[in-house]
Amino acid sequence: MQKESIVDVDLGDNVQQEMSVLFSDIRDLTTLSESMTPEDNFKFINAYMLNVEQAIVENQGFIDKYIGDEIMALFTGEADNAVKAGIAMLHRLRE
Image 1: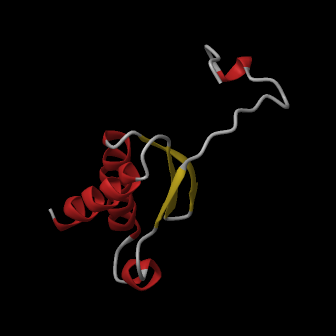
Image 2 (image 1 turned 180 degrees about the vertical axis):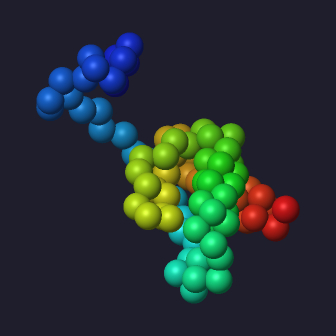
Image 3 (image 1 turned 90 degrees about the vertical axis):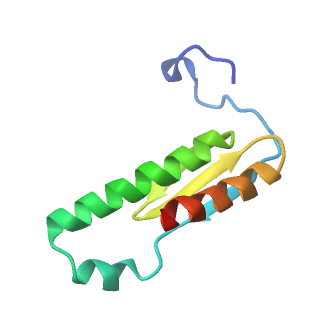
């Protein structure tokens, strides 16, 4: 939107673009979290989010919103960027 700050955005300002959307969440998180302490849950989620966010940003995406453990990321430009981010996320999870 070419604004210097989010506070410069006025109600009704908008830009229309084609984008790719990537959704990610942790499979069976409820079951997994039941076997962890609250502290371990907190550390696990934070480590997951940090790694996933880095994969998204490194592939020219940005996070639109968090919904629990779900992340919705948007990518302008090539749809391949979303696919590459998804692949990078899988590699980071294995590590």
